[in-house]
Length: 257
Picture 1 (cartoon, rainbow, N blue to C red):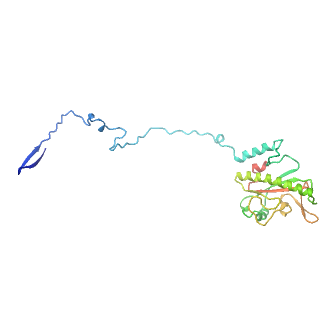
Picture 2: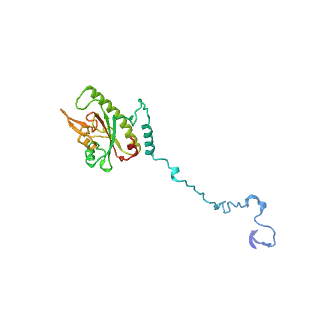
Picture 3: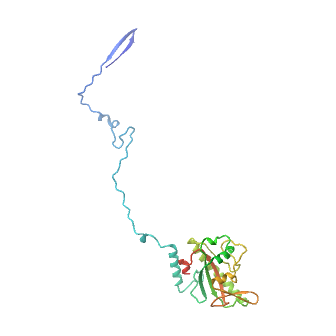
């Protein structure tokens, strides 16, 4: 019930409003006749059509595990060593493309040495950009038998040694590149200069008549005007190439060269 008054011609007129509630009414709310305005979407029951995230009763996917021996590929050096073995067993070699492993011959010898501390100290001056004392240092020595001896100079001897030096450089570049791909440091001595071929260098050199060569199984002979290298089997008929790396001497790549 409510009342209010209005002013009409200077007189207040009182009006009375009576609201009667019929509790027996059969009308139900919300009125479905009003259409979608009053309809409630069960997905968005909150005001402003805000929904509640529904928790789905889903089981997590089960991960299927496979034994590692079936999924892990072979180690990179194992693949590389296998490739070296395949090349090594080939009977014919292409002359147009250099190979890391030369043909099997009595003219070529490859030896691997772990450099002692004294040799590392000597080589520290040859490779000034490397801290050789932090890791083991391995020397790869490639010895090639020559037709001409070192105890006498001749044009034939000079031409032969130049040809062997260029062949060694080609092979040494490939060997060092392969070791670097496996994460190791590697460099070799340029036979023409006695200095590192790849890395930076100073004034120090390592020649085949250096006292360091005695640690690698060689001896030095006194010739008429200079010292010459002596191989334990080939005597003075030898050319030597020197490669150094921090890969261990038991590494598969080195073992199969």
